[in-house]
Amino acid sequence: MADIPAYNPYAPPIFAQPKQPSPAFDPMLGYKKRDQLFPGEDSYFKANPHVAGMAAETGDVILNPYSPPGVNHDSVARNEAMRLYMRERGITPDFAVTPEQRQQFVGTAYGSDDAALRQTIAARIYSGDPSANATDEQKSYADALIQRLMGR
Image (tube, rainbow, N blue to C red):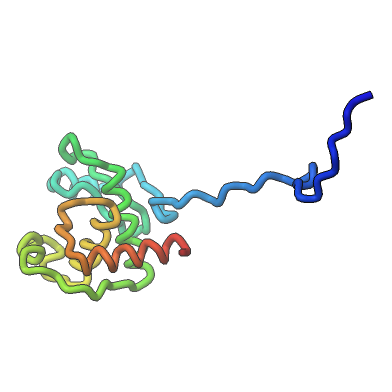
């Protein structure tokens, strides 16, 4: 006769299902990378290999196939996904921008658009891009935004 284990009132029922892990945080924030570029996008990227990616007007992330080797496309994609997230929700960071950061973006689309400049700084912080040259205030803002995204 087999030994029957003693009753343990604290043991989980044998029919209990193991807890399912919570869904992993999606660093792309639900946005998709679109591989097929429109002709205008392809022309733009070909003429601007220094632009690694873009938060496209279609709501997709597009990456520049002509960007130089060594570009971290995963980081660029996360950056552009955060830009889409902020754009679609009307989020404009309210932190101060340093004179050095302003100088860094002179002559770019961000140089004359303060809201876009703040958004790109926050997105670069999110993606881990050191070119953000982020201040403590900017890092705190980005951290709070990321915590909100993660539902914490």
